[in-house]
Length: 260
Image: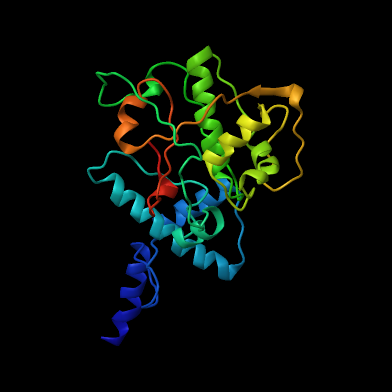
């Protein structure tokens, strides 16, 4: 009996069966292979101790992604640059934790006469939705929400898709109760653009992903706001027919790997 134990252990190793402690996630050879491929793609390096921790986290995320994609869902998930991080780490590093009051400062509303379609996908109507951008480690999601909505509004009105300067909002909109990389509100950012009389393009005010001093040049402003409307849930459906809106989402642990 004792003589057969080494053979059984050797057989388990050849089959790729993982060996792990009781408190650890058992990571198999295929998951290790995918982790090393992911590390190479994203140019990641770790100390020996951190490697073990990140491997465990990656394997857990990978299994969650595969389980989700094998289910009946309306969207797919995929590995990305966040796949070695837990959702708690992502929330701490990227998401603003302060409570937000999302009311626009003016109580004006958009109304229409109908009838209205149940939904509108502006991506299918033409070049009206700007490409996905990356905010990096700066808590500037509010600036991207603002520029994305304004870029679409300008494209719908003029047929021209612009790329507006999130960094200007990070650097310049503090007087409207925004806090750069520490968070802000799109409603307050729109008001800043309105009273500031414009926002520059990303080509002349490139994104840095960190707080800086304001470098706004009025003569280079290319995007403008005439007014800001607060849309309630009752009025949301009529508004989507004619304008882009700026929803804000409460994010769950599926968010970091959302694909389509």
